[in-house]
Image 1 (cartoon, rainbow, N blue to C red):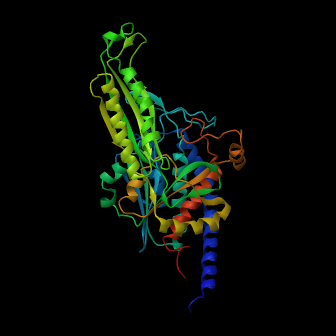
Image 2 (tube, one colour):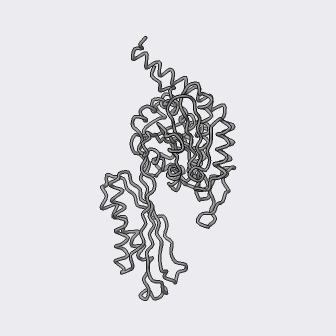
Image 3 (tube, rainbow, N blue to C red):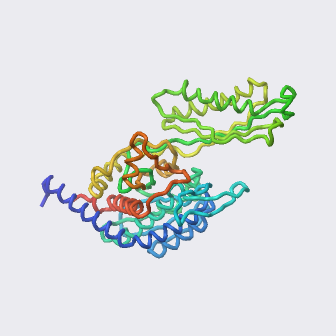
Length: 434
């Protein structure tokens, strides 16, 4: 008998509530194991394309769950497949890499790890929450296999290297990700964010920025610091560039459009009384729209050349290196998913939010023609978040801060449950039509 619209709606709501309860029960039951995995991953981070221990740990866990695992995809990436009858193929991505920085969270399981980066020793930390993501990824995989009677299709869980350098997704695709393995029908990824734990943020359309790296070498002529007229000072040229390039943002870009040019490193010289031959400037360009991206790239190159020309110096070596493109969430997939998340976590805890200004290479999969949804999950005590929002309140540490310190249990549980429900919803469970 054909259901009436109201009856059909009640049927779907009841199914969603049942799924949410089953998923929550699964995640709660496995949490002690997830907690141990999280603390191990947190204490042993590895930087981009060096994630050998991390990848091996995740590969072993996924094989134990029942996935068919292929390692060393895109150098250190993993691909885990679980086939459960006819249905869509759904990609779920986590990142493997940490950051080259010291952790100052104060946690007893804080990282003391070191790595070599460009031949130099650096400390390493999971100060962007990738350890939360990996643990939730494993939790979702376990829950989905335990609840396989409620969905059909193929799970494609990938552990991606080098997200922090915005190069791991390309490496996996170049290594045949969508040729050696099924091209997915949908793709999901999540990211921890300084929101209250138990909350989820998302949006349709752009949810991250375009990213381009700046690598410029300004050339001069070395000499004695007491006789600058006998030299050609590249430090002065670089300083002029750092100041003048901001006019591209403030005077050439539409003020209503997002765009940022940040110089994060200036390297040149050895001591105070020697003028060096060259200075290296490194930075980043961020934008949402292709038009703004093109304007900023052209402006940075033009100002760099003009800064050198004003000093009658040789033309600089300018490299503007493309990174990740902005993630464009599928409106249809977002609309299909948000109802399930609201039903599970409550309307007040699931809301649309503005795009982040940071960048992400999850866009590389979406730009292969795969409808995707990238969403955010909170990691901090709601009281601390509320305090930080008040004028003069104590701020909370943002991603990439040495003090970034997610509260593990509620953060991991929310992320794992949300991802499990999102996947089930497109594989014939809560999203199925009665």
